[in-house]
Image (cartoon, rainbow, N blue to C red):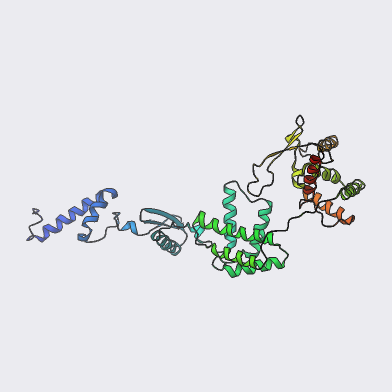
Length: 379
């Protein structure tokens, strides 16, 4: 049967054949070539052909069942493309709906793993994982504070972590004995975790309630600056402590030497117990102290400490005494646990009835700084 031109409307059968032939050729084209052409003629198309990727499909989420039984959802919207895999199709549909709404609001779609986070404890774990991934895992002090927040607020829903809940947390911590500085650190770390989740992962969390809670706790006197310590040991107290530890035959750690070394160098007990023979320069009598404590950046904060006798105690002579006693291959100059040193120091102070003197809260540092100033003024 001859095929007549399209404008010959008298032969309706010829029109059908021509359209069928046209759409057969369209289907044989690639998706990139067929899309702009099919988009023009789609009002005249007899049916929607799923084999052709049209302009309309770019605005809709597509679902594909994988061989594993899971569902992969793909969202193409306003030039953005995101995809996720779910075990159930309903979960995929809900995530796709939220992703499309986020794109419409100009936001970045949240990954499914992040979107499922609901509690503050999960945000803490997320923060720790992110920091470990970049080689900045929490150190001892921050890790202890994170553990405390996990116990007190870990089960709290992110939505429920409002101003009232944070104020109640502050009151509870103060009742447990936390001081204004400690509580201020806790509130600051809560804000850090929330702002990290919002900035890095785009989670819809608010940090304004934390600022309001801090203002309220400050008005209540629960958050504030600490009292500056001016307590330092007298020379008589130092002599009594040194004699007390030297006279104790059961004392394994050389506490008297550590006390004299702390006064001579103004080093903390943890820094003293981490000092290494490999970082000691015998020619210049300098000790390289690695990662010295700093409120902003501890890692990489290496400092050189001079070992001299400007405070009444000769730091270099103490090092030589330790070298004469060295009996193993331990690279530490004072191979002892700093916590054990602190416990022994507190026990000695209690035995001698010396009040309000601690090794860890700058008691030795105050003495070292004062001794150095006195030695300079006497020159």
